[in-house]
Amino acid sequence: MDTLLNWQITMPIALAALVCGYLLGSIPFGLILTRAAGLGDIRSIGSGNIGATNVLRTGNKKLAAATLLLDALKATAAALIGWYFFGDEAGLLAGFAAFLGHLFPVWLGFKGGKGVATYIGTLLGVAPLMVLVFAGIWLATAKLSKYSSLSALVATLVIPVVLWFIGEPKIALIMAIMTVISWWKHETNIKRLIAGTESKIGQKG
Image (tube, rainbow, N blue to C red):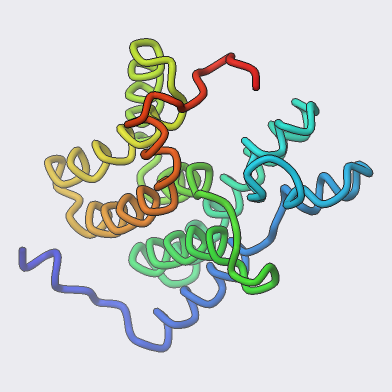
């Protein structure tokens, strides 16, 4: 508990990490890529969000994959830049802020994506081996349930617990906060899962 509460980062550096991370995370790659490809405003179709899942609804798998990769890497970049210049805690805060920037981009009226890619990207920046744990949990849950959303929700729930048990309380705390926010952003998916109306992996329509 002492380690959890004993943050060494100064307020100016923490603020700088948060601001820079937020700005990186708020780059709406899904919107930029679909507009550049002449597919219009991604916010006008499907769920209306800017993430890779909605980009996939355009029928362009390459754009969806590029969106997923860039949305993840912007959080990784934020975490690594913060770590390189100011240390582990700054990297952790920058990654967290990138996650928030993706979910609530100021340029789009604070209406962004659901954050799974940036969650993974932050994890890659601050605890890279945990990405393998995330992937393993996602794949196992997906194989059993056939639900992509449920797989992501289960993975985000387990990651903070694993981090806590391996002795990374600060990272566990931040990832736990991100998990709570991610679950909140997936509220409609959770309701559909409960009702049995959520689309399964590979299901059309």
